[in-house]
Amino acid sequence: MSIYAVSYTYTDDVATRDEVRPSHRDFLRALNAEGVVRASGPVDGGIGALVIVEAPSEEDALRILDADPFATRGVIAERGVRQWDVVIGGLAG
Image (cartoon, rainbow, N blue to C red; front, top):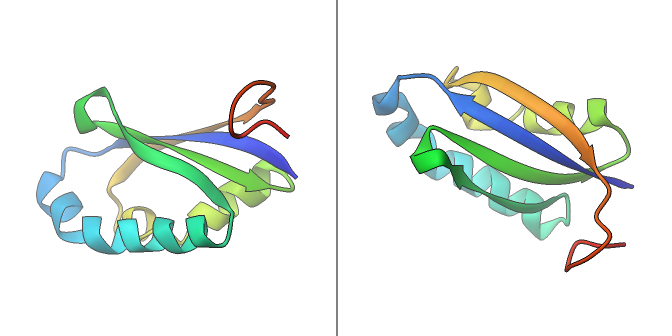
């Protein structure tokens, strides 16, 4: 398994984001309990987020997050993914 840093940039639809946030966080907490999402949180004052995912491939990491309520409700304007080879710290293999 590899570690992937998935970045979200949100749309300007703050009302929908606020409405969906509890289910978005429940979704990520469940994946964290399974060991799939290793860390997650907002960046840049809340205009986006960073989700650290453990998955077999970049495609799998994105596919897992396709079910995120933020994605299904259309509040993610842009999503990017990069493989991250962690060598120091709690996520290091």
